[in-house]
Amino acid sequence: MYNQINLESIPTPDGKYVIDNSNIVMVSNTKDLYIRKVKKKTASTAAANSASMFGNPTFYLTASTRRDWTELPGTEKEINELQQLLKQKGWKTDEYMENTASEEQVKALDNPRIFHIATHGFYAKAEDPSLQKDLTENEAMMAENPLMKSGLLLRGAGDVLAKTKYNYNMESGVLTSYEAMSLNLDKTDLVVLSACETGLGEISNGEGVYGLQRAFFVAGAKVLIMSMFKVDDEATQKLILNFYRKWLTTGNLRQSFIDAKKELRVEYPDPFDWGAFMMIGLD
Image 1 (cartoon, rainbow, N blue to C red):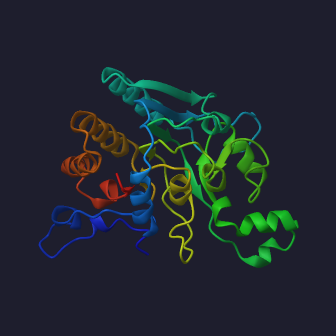
Image 2: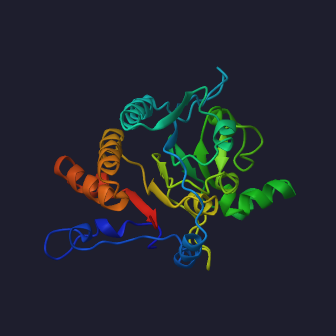
Image 3: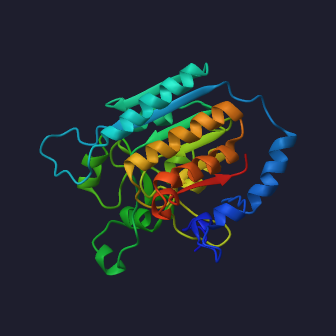
């Protein structure tokens, strides 16, 4: 259960929350503590100040498809503001939106220091096995693989999800956790998944949480910021942009995130609004 909730948002007897009294560092798996030690001894040159940002993908490329996934114009505003902020600090930025926010473009990433993606995420919960009796052997295997049941929606994802409930790789559009493991992020300090339900995953003994958070750590990312449930767009944008402003000024990743959440609570006191986002990993 601890992989599915944000411990910081638990109320305490003094009328506050855990975030007010404790500094909790979440790791995806305890072996990450050991891996961090090894990596420090063999550390390579840090990535330059570069950021790759994705937002507001065009989910539907065909006019006739039933539209279950809403467009996200607010994420385009988020990316534009973030780009301006980073450029003011001398960062090299690449932004991909609408038709350029594609799965192929994500797979072509080459170790940006920041990878920021603002889109829908999904986690397909297990279905009754009796409903899978007509699946092919290959589809049945994919339906059972936790790494194939979570992902991020990019250009054309709506068309893909309208055609299949299991084979998300039949066409380009959905970046599954399985595919995310192979991204080039060995020198990436921060991955921000500014999306709904990106933190969810399936529990497996010995491997922590399967799903996007494990996939991005396998790909090499040091720290992830992601949401555990659906969140308000405006609150998300305020939190994320305030976090970046603080981090780019102070250089302290974790403290900047905590301070940004505490400031968001002034306007959004309910933990539903600020407790969705978690920072996972060792900076």
